[in-house]
Image (cartoon, rainbow, N blue to C red):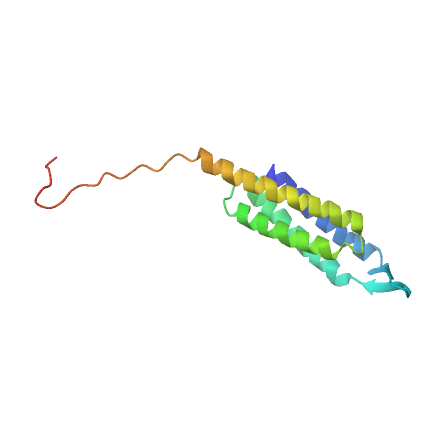
Length: 138
């Protein structure tokens, strides 16, 4: 489930980044008392594209069962939430959707991690041999 959510999150970032390039790199947002202002957000488009590509690669790692995916996926979801927070002024619905997916990725990843720990068999306790003058022969 985590791999699917990571892939969906990566795709939303890629689509969001491509949508910025399609709209001629400018968004108009209202400024207080001065009408509309045009802001160039080409840099954010690149951030979304790069983050989406990395999230898709991590989703592939999650699909094939790599262990390093859990902490990397959670870290990327936190970075994605931060990027979504800064994108709120430009696309509020899109940013809130991305942040909701981030929360879902974090929750599923942490739940998956705790479930894997419960399924892991306990380590066998090594038998300690006594050495010295009171050692018993085998």
